[in-house]
Structures are given as structure tokens and as C-alpha cells.
Image (cartoon, rainbow, N blue to C red; front, side, top):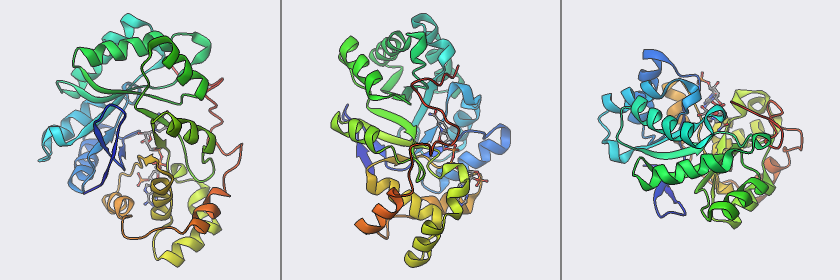
Length: 277
Ligand code: NAP
């Protein structure tokens, strides 16, 4: 059983989720069914991943009751205009083959377009009509969150941001926490790049008798963040949630935080200027 965090709106959300980016087709269905069978109860998809259909199929195939699974999807930048956003949310829910989606997020703020507030209004209205349970955002900076609060009075319950040892997002996490927003970590393992062979992390893995991935996932949890690692391998799916039998010392947490740098993003996707449609 993966423990939960409580969201601002009172709902519970598992502390670790399962990323589905790049999982496609019948192979993807099997991979997601496997994740559910190993205990994952939070699935992260997006309209833009073009795999909401197979996520829904895996949920149907699984013996886990629907109401025990938290399903997340995301609104793409090209559909931020209010009417488009309303239709896209309805399309997401239909593609998933569900009656409602548990958590729906704005995928990127695309601030130069000036449309994220009307997109947010569409999420609010879809929540009121019962199509979405909880509403949140991805890649929002403090100034974007302030705009949502000022314009609508409603804060997201989740902010999903790039977060891994090379980019620990200390300031954004602090801001989210001050507002009661749960920070979710995307690419929590740095997309299996050089971070997995970092000497500091290898050393910690050997001292704690855990894998580097487990050290990293544990670090996310002790930061109070919610990692959503993706793995197509059953053994790694198990490994990535087997992190509740040890605790990193404050010094070791600091050693991992010291790996972070201002230019540590994987692909230089700074939400102040980066746009995704
Ligand atoms: P990630 O979860 O950091 O890393 C995935 C990679 O790590 C895969 O190549 C996987 O390989 C490998 N891996 C997983 N567990 C491992 C382990 N125990 N040992 C060694 N390698 C391991 O990267 P991600 O997929 O980019 O991020 C996770 C999720 O975040 C995505 O799937 C998506 O749902 C979400 N996301 C959101 C945004 C956003 O803008 N909101 C952006 C990016 C991602 P195998 O699959 O071969 O095991």
C-alpha cells in the first residue's frame, strides 16, 4: 500500500504515481496493468501522450476497482481557449472510457499566449459538472499561480514540475508548499540520464543497500514531493515503490540537494519562455 498525501480539496492522492509517457499500444496496456498489479494507484497520462485509450483499457482489464485508481490527464497548449478546453476535457474522459477523471492538469502555462486563465476556468466548470474530481497545473511558476488565484480565487491542488537531483526546484517547492499545493515531480529519475551514474548517489546506494533509483525516489518523498517514475519493466516498477523501509539522514538529503544547479533542467524547458502545444 503506497501511503497518501491530502490535497487542498480534501481528496487523498498516492505519494508515488506511475508515469505513462511513451507507453503505447498493447505493450503499453500490459505495462500499465503490471504497474497496477504491483500496487501503483496513480496513473499519469496526457492528451498529448496519445495513450489515454490504452490507460483506460489497462484500468478496465485490471482487477483493481476503478474508484481505487487516481487517473490524471492534461490539457494541451493548443486547446487552452475556453470552448476548446471544455471539448478536450470531454474528449479525454471519453478516450479514457471513464465517467470522470480524478485529476486534470493544464500541461504548460504558455504565458506568452495569455490563455491559461480561460483554460483554468474550463477546468473549474468541468469540475463543477462532475467530469473532473480535482484540478491542477503543470510547470506553473509562482507568478502564474498568483494570476490564477487573483483571477478565479481557486488554486490548483497539484503543480507537476520537472524535479530530479540535478534540478531540485527548492524555490518553487517552497512556494507550492506555502499555498498548500502538492508538488509532483516529473522525470523524477532524470529520465534515466547521467544522474543514475552520479558518484554521490552510487555511494549512498551502496551505504543504504538500495538502488540509485530507490535513493532518488526516497529523496523526493522526504522533500514532500510526489514522484511519478515511468518504467516499462516489472522489476523496476516494484523497485521504485519499495522505498518505505529506510530513511535518508538530513546530511544525505543535503548531499543530494547539493547536486542541483540552476542549469540542471534536462532540456532547458523554462516555463517562463518555453511553449508546448
Ligand atoms: P523518469 O520517470 O524520470 O525516467 C524514466 C526512465 O527511467 C525510463 O527510461 C525507464 O526505463 C528508466 N527507469 C525507471 N525506473 C528505473 C530503475 N529502477 N532503474 C533504472 N532505470 C529506470 O522520466 P519520465 O518518463 O520523463 O517522467 C515520468 C513521468 O512524468 C512521465 O512518464 C510523464 O507521465 C510525466 N511527465 C510530465 C511532464 C509534464 O510536462 N507535465 C513532462 C515529462 C514527463 P524503462 O522504462 O526501460 O524501465
